[in-house]
Length: 409
Image (tube, rainbow, N blue to C red; front, side, top):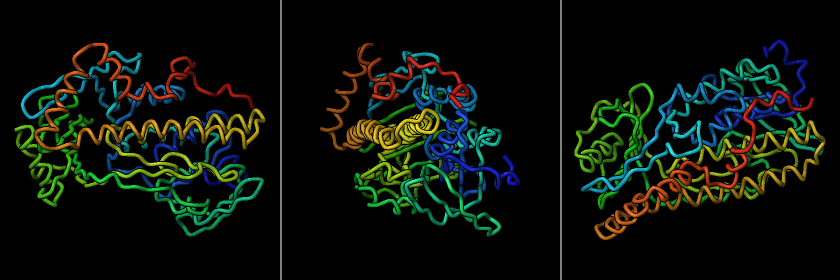
């Protein structure tokens, strides 16, 4: 919808933040015919790859909008992960046993995912999508919310809506207007990450190395690239590229990537959880509500699950006349439960992978060999790591994946 129609467009829902969570939420609402106004401060999708793992339950949710095939063609379908210690292969995790058609983990940079969602948003008639626009302030009352936004040309406008969804991340300043901030706790380990041209002979496999000297993870990316993530240790070079080069040489025996890194960064995982997911008619979604360790690829997918569940709640309220307080409390209860389970899994996986020393490494290798040593255990682990065993996933296997255009008007 073009800017010339903004004056006559009265949104039912305003969404702040057009990352993967906010964009997906706006698309689900628009597909159901809800008038939605999406506001994003950036003018273009992010260029950085950031999160890369799109899990099968998320692809099933994308299928409701007919997006799963497009995304799968743009990414790399990872059907096998290989676990190593310092001496040998410990076993294989095979995702091809997962429920079809999404029996793989899709490796797709977050920037590419957001770009695909933005392209679809541009053609959604029920959604106004404003980029290069900043939300300066919000105000809440019993009827909804008022949003003061400033466009790139400096024009300020007050926007009224019945519900406001904040999807602007863990450090979005608007969320502090809704009450106490999230509880935040650092996990302790630090990691270094980088993308480089893929010089490994591993194809579309993921490879995980667990040694007495630290861990290293490697995932294929589109366009002939590969993602590397390594645990940082005392004495590692401060420059991320140098630290990755050293770790790749030491743990895999392969030459480093000096000079070929496309992008590198360091990060220290933390956990955040908002005391409440909604205040009146303003709702937190995705990283605005919670943050977990990115190890294991659970965080972005949990946020996209939030968006799908929040869309269901808002459709029930605005189209079926359901009680707002009841629906939002149910959204908060269900999504906190999923977050707590997913965050605990991510933390356990990170703890196991960051043990160092000969004794701890030997015990870890024995455990991994046992877990991957039988087909039944492999199948259970594939469902565990692909998020199919979380409490919000089972209904997806039973639900028709057709678009929601038939929602009641």
